[in-house]
Image (cartoon, rainbow, N blue to C red):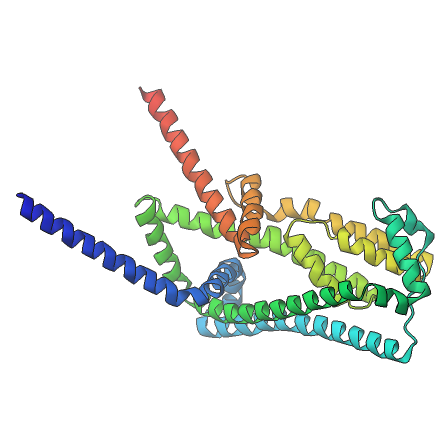
Length: 356
């Protein structure tokens, strides 16, 4: 090949690469607004598929009917608790506003035991006692801080509303995906075959599938269980705005923080307004709920997988720190794939050394 032909081929290859890059970038720009929704749809579809197959069997193998019914049930599961929690927050806020406008809003005095709380006991007792004795003076003194907190809560509520809308769209798309699961699984296997190893595409597709289900059960599932149990306890004890506290507990549990950070304050409130016996029972209940992840996570996280549970958990936590809740799944999948590739390389190298 002479220099002119080499130059011509090089220019053509460069032009093709640039055009391919532009096409890929353009496709990414077009799909980016829907990327989070699509990722959640894939995660939900993979996590829910075993239940979907059972529903499909009950319905006599009717795929479209099972997909439609699953979508309606999933939307009801998402929307019903959201409406209940929202009504709880709205009703509590309205009651507080009415009582404050009428001058009848009172805060019960703190129990003496609040002083004994570590780190914050003394300051919290003084703040609580001042609020109980002269609420209007306390509100006036801390008006700027209260205003900022209110603005932050409004922004958080708007963000939660947007997130719920995203989940609604994701659930609808996931219904389409589970109805076409065989084709989606085949495409995923082909992608892994091209990216990693032609003979192991199905193996790594199964690894990604099992990782998603493990994290969905072991992290989100456990967090949801703790939030629901907390909500039940607060409803029984008549705690105001139980929906808000349950949502905060859900976020804390997903972030791998103990729910007792919220339930502790709720228990303190219950001690100040309820009789001693039910308050003590509720406090014990809160401790059990907060510590329940200690035996729930080993049951669900990493179940049915060869990848160590610690790898999955580290990937999930690291991914969430980097990318939020969606990072729980992406981080766990990436770290699990990396671990499996590393162990395969290590075993191959060890086998080569033994043969030599």
